Length: 509
Image (cartoon, rainbow, N blue to C red; front, side, top):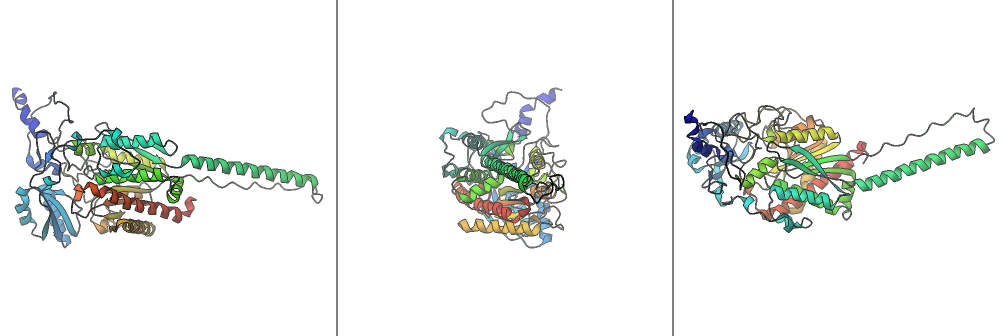
């Protein structure tokens, strides 16, 4: 038994990368037995990442290589190599170009296995990654002004983004309500806000009810007048009573659900989503288009879905992608939330290896994050559009990704709305976004959010959007691109909502 306690320090050394303690907390309690560490099981997000003395992963001499893939045979070969070597895919597998992060020690072996044309996109990833954990250098929440663009000149940690949401709820109580989705494995709350001109709508409905009551009184008075003074009538008993005209059904608002941060390292998603929220809130009452849309739709906006993973990128590892739930391999935590949704689960384009960044989990919806959003959509019953924001590649994607032989019955409307959104986006800063199904513009990927929301959640206008850029910086998009990316994406979202308002007449907009 003594052998189990002697190598505790060695075991902790092996596990510290995958399970570090939160920053500023002492690691005082050591429990458990010795665990043998096999480096080939190391999660791809940590592949050859060294931790310096402040606990933040380093990526010295690691390259992002763009590989040119010209056939399905080459694509399958690349997919197998990535899976076997547990490499980190930065862009989706597809015929065309695929970006892969590779440690310098593996580059020669990778090129020997994949002798396709390639280009170095990022020669040394560490040049773009902070030397210190960003969580150690956070401005106090009180220093931010959430009502102008200065807040979007920087990326922000989870606590600051949460403070933004809480502030919007407190400052605009007639327009914004706090919306909780649930709690994660590490106990963090996933929440956002619902933006809707409910007060104005309630006033309008009250006025409509008053008008209906007045009309009913007038009809009743007219009936009595005819009975008393119309000499042509034989008697009230012989005259058939007119049926009351049924009142028109009330116009209950439809909902649009938007979130970012399903993949932890994609920081531009939460930034863009919070900007959209800010513009909807501040534009209400001053911008006619926004006011009309906010009166007619409930916009439920969740800045960060994968809150555990997002916090981890700020405290320990900038390249972390998955959530932080335990798996069957102790030192390979995390499930890819966007491979764990319940439609056509684990049928291709994901991994059964817990150490892979595309690990789909042991069963559908075992990851808490997608399950809570799915439950919310089913409970609401009025969600007509869903947008899952990611990065990168500049794509506006439609269903399906799991079943490439299946075409949505609403494909014409979904595509028309998506192409219009991409055009509106391009009109702002000239950035082109490709539009099409996941299968067509990238590659098969099962367990994705937009497939489930469309096929199982009944959300007609379901999309996954890959934001800027096309690979020059990848996940390390500079902060000076946050505002232009947000401005163009807002234009796309507003176009989409307006398209739905005009197209779906049966929903009584």
